[in-house]
Image (cartoon, rainbow, N blue to C red; front, side, top):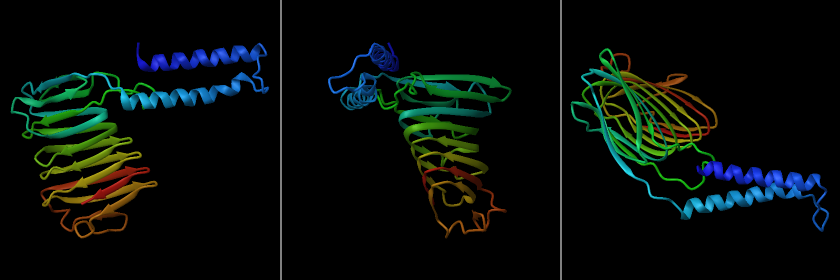
Length: 265
């Protein structure tokens, strides 16, 4: 039985029992309705669940897997990940799009579309089960990508810590969406590409390699952003390298953030 089914089952039985007792007119000696105990019971149950998450974590298997390139000359890769640590870097061989180690297992689909390989990667187990803070396994991934082919990289991350080093990669487009995450992102050092970064309550540090020019536009809510203005001077509503328009290697970066902490250097 899944943990969230067990928790919700207990909660529903408790709620139903208290409703029945209340309808039958049962009262505590001090005159309180039994229904008034519902939320205290829920808070106690939630506290037990949180403590269990600290002291009890079951065994989780580590899966090594690879995604063959299938002769494609470019790729579209979408990665969904949460509830653990994620590392992405170069290192796959010429016949692979990716290889790596995946605690908790990997569920992926790969389809060849002309010269393009389209791949979706996500955890084999359901890390979004409710409640989020209950006992669970930490899903740690370490992924090496092929640095020799153009890749459109899309990442949906939630409740994780990520170190994403794309310095040696040929990324044609980068999209990153994060929830409650801590992300350290090193951008590719070559090519002209777009980077769309959409953050919730997150922490993000972006490293722009030397030799890569940038134009940075931001739409911020309750966010705190620090930009190296010696490299990216303010130009009204955006920040831009002096040589951005003519540079061979440049990123057009947009940042959309809520309650986030952001550093670009």
